[in-house]
Length: 341
Picture 1 (tube, helix red, strand yellow):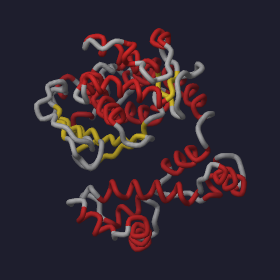
Picture 2 (cartoon, one colour; picture 1 turned 120 degrees about the vertical axis):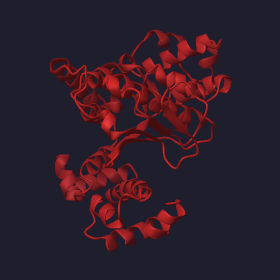
Picture 3 (tube, rainbow, N blue to C red; picture 1 turned 90 degrees about the vertical axis):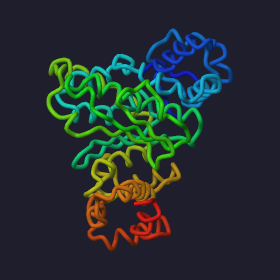
């Protein structure tokens, strides 16, 4: 997304996704004029693929659609977000060597297509999980986007894996209300509402091995284009966002403010001053990141408190427990018990 943006909002989403929404709306008898009510978007933007659209305008357009079609339509919308609808990101995933490579590219380059989500991958002995959070307050349109994006990834995974694994059972969890027990849009996928997380889960063995469309030349070309796009996006990101990204990549080591400042080619004093100008602090960013990660890991009983402390960069479980109680008011064991685990 390199062209001048349209609409209102701090974050950006590719117009490709909204153009796809107008197609689905047309089939349901919803006019483009109705979709654009209150969005501050010109009608001409639907003829302009891959231009950045402000997130507030995009959410208003999606909310106009939801008002008439309902949240259930997110599954169909997501399934129509095929590889080509994701631009270079889709091609990078398609031509990757393994599903691990493809997932890493989605996590790294998602901001080149939509700056609305934070993604995180995890793996246990049996499954792989993709977690998603929105960067804006909960809303009907936000719920729709979460469900649509996870639906898209689920469908793409099923298209990319080996033919003998395409009937594997997957699971999609969402945090908001709904009844998807009878859904038929995503065959072999169970969709559960009112879950503690937004997450897509696939069996580990179904995702192993080389992908059938692996092409090293095309993969490299797609990666190069995505790196260039990411650099462009990064220029508009806040410094706090860049610090969070670095900390997230090195969570188990948890670098100091001096370490991160060095990675950003500035002094620690300069980094602290610039973060203060954004009304943030290095400690606040670090604590927020650790707290969010800790909550997710504590809901998974396969990890001991000692293991979680290690993953979060603490020297021992006692220091982690003290920090967690400061954040939440509960000890890690109390939080785990209250979460139903």
